[in-house]
Structure formats: C-alpha cells, structure tokens
Amino acid sequence: MKITMLGTGTSSGVPVLTCECPVCLSKDPKDNRLRSSVLIETDEVNLVIDSGPDFRQQLLRTQTKRLDALLFTHEHKDHTAGLDDVRPFNYLQGSKYMDIYARQNVLDQLKREFHYAFLESSYPGVPLIRTHAIENKAFAIDNLQIQPIQVMHHKLPVFGYRIGGFVYITDANAISEEEKEKIKDCDILVLNALQKTDHVSHFRLDQAIALAQEVRAKKTFFTHISHKMGFHKEVNAELPEGMELAFDGLSFTL
Image (cartoon, rainbow, N blue to C red):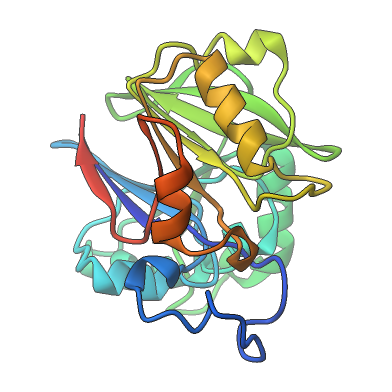
C-alpha cells in the first residue's frame, strides 16, 4: 500500500492572497501547503480521502491516472469542494461511476451542493457518482478493509480511518477512550495539529504529540497545518523522535 499526502494545509487563518507572513512567503516547498487530503494506492484500488478545493491540482501534480473511490471525513467545504473534478476520471475510465463513501449526513450535504450530479434526468458531462452511506463500523472498498474512527471537531462528529497499520485523522480536538483503542500501536499515524496555540476545534501541536505518544504510534506525521505553526524545518527540529510535520507530496509504503 502506497500512501501520498496530497495536501497538508488548512483554510484557517488569513486568506492566502493577502497573507504576507514569513511562512506563507517561504521559499521552502514544505511550507507551501494545499488543503488536507491523502491518496492511497494498492494493486486493486486507488482511493482518495477528501476532495477539497485543491483536488484537481493535487491529482494533476501526482499524475494520478486512475481513481476508484472517494472517502470523506466530514462535510466542511475544505474537504468536499472539489467533488465535481471526478469528471475526468469518469471519462478516462469509460463512463465508470465514481464510488463515494461518507456518513449519511455528509452525503445529504453533497447532494444539496452538487445537486446537478444527482438528478434522475441529468445532462451529459455531469459527474457520475454512486453513493455509499457508512457508519462507525468496519467496511470494505473492494478488498481494502477500512475501520472508521469517530473523533470530535468541536461539536461536529468527524470520521478518521484506520487501514491496516495506517491511521488518518484530521479536523479533531477530542477522541473518546473507546475510539483511541482503534488507533493504538499503529505503524503510521497522520494526525491534525493546527498550530501551537489553542484552537476551538483542532488539536494544538502539544496535544497532538501527547495523543501520538498515548496510542503508541510507531511513526507520526502531523497534518492540517496552519501558517501559524511556524517553519517546517524549525518545527521539525523541536519534535520528539518518531514525529515529523507532514508535507505535500510526502509518500511512504506500508
């Protein structure tokens, strides 16, 4: 299983077009982050978790030629706004419908926002989408076994996912003890850490470090990083052994 971080950033903070902070102007490509998303590739299935506003750009720069399914963590626009850009994959894959997996409330919101893709009588060229409602219990996409992990994004329930030894959690600031059991002893944990200071709906960096230590993750990468975190190189130097900031394009195999 090959895993590629398509994006490790966030929409939080100052709009990027007007931001003149040193991090946003950094020449280090690891400080330049698109919205959080991840590509998982196996011999049987190519899966993306979350299609935010940068979805098209992310898959163009990874030269992804095949996509079988989309899996959503939650309904916020920085994780769903790129859904329309499944259309090239519909075309390239012989008008094959794109399977999308999410909680029912997330699917309901997608159907409102992209209503033209769900009409009984639609016009040519709209996204071809087939929906699958999931709950907080294990399911499979082809032969890829997936375990949802329910976390809280302030008051909003959000899904993280465990796939084999890989755990992906973004947009969280609380996880119950029961759900933590699903994370324990994973090989690679990708976990959100927005910034070093308090935030209403995201883990601070020190909180994310503590959680990674608690669940005994063998290796941890932090994602959904705001420009307020600081420079990639400097923050990495401060992190405990076995922990790093993720960056766009980071790839590893399990």
